[in-house]
Length: 495
Image 1: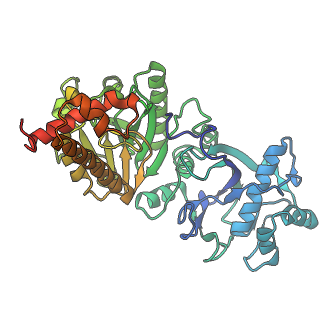
Image 2 (image 1 turned 90 degrees about the vertical axis):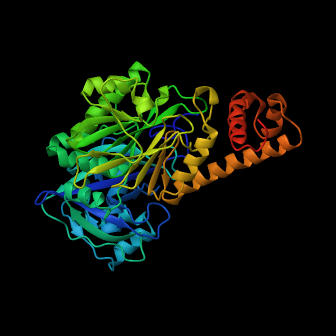
């Protein structure tokens, strides 16, 4: 099983061609944001740059000068979608603005082929030299709806008088904000933004315009410096890294928390080239945020979570945080016990609260980031998959079940397991409860078999795990022994 997060790949649904315009007004350095209708099933309530899918009718014949037919089609779609969503017509020899009530705007919305015919009838064209290519994003493979989106940057002297489509339409509001204002609004949970928009805003906020535009070209999936990542909440940056984990997983979610000060959680990277690439990714991230690494944080010390921890600690002169039984093998460490908080600079600060959750590992901890209400679950659950509780390596089924019960009561807006995609709101608690119920179901099945007189592990295994492929029974035998130890501890059967 490859990583759940891939941008430029053939996995998942086929991406739909799309294009957007980053509309920038020079007077106040502001960008135009369009708010998507709250009722939309896909990204409802999100703020986005105006744009949409490329229609078959977008021929590109009104783009001049044009040396690339595909580029001309994408740009035509972008300009058409801006017109539909905002009423702004980004054409030459003049820019125009149309109210929603204007018949031509509604006509183009209902029948896209009319757009280029309208431009020709009005003697208008799309000046390619007025638009700067500003990167390409392909929606990650895990998304049920995927888009292959070209970004175009357009400058105007002052804010243009756009009008949204209306309360019952796709776009319900328009806002002009500086990149920093938009990021602040997002940090206060007043705006919901996707990872590509955050990427654009961070660079426009951090660098002079010319340098920012150059950096916008280097997007995940098309970059030698950036790894594939998502930023689902302010200050929460998830990078699935190739790690020495157990099949079917191949990657571990390394989570970078904060902005000015960054905590690197579970850097389980063993491959030297992957380590070098992650270091470049961190450097690029720090440049964009004007931040610096401040801590390495470990949920536990299995290699797929800590393989790169010591080198990162030495490279950045930062401590390694974790449970005392985890940090003892490293230099430059600071222990975190249950309930203790690691604070990272910010306004307000980010606060990682340690929650002791043994079971998979004697020193396993989850971390709850209080500002964003994000739960870093480590190896308490996988999405999808099963967490191994191996008595030969410190696994304790009784402790694990108690940890699942404890964590299932936490109200998190975002839950990030170590393996697999994050979960939104109640999805996280539901996964913990389902995992707990599955373990208890398995335990009851084992108890019933014990009551019939089946005692030998070799006899118990195929009966208790009759729903598990035979080739996985070696792994299941460790789980069975962990359940038997818990049953013995409860004195359900004689010891």
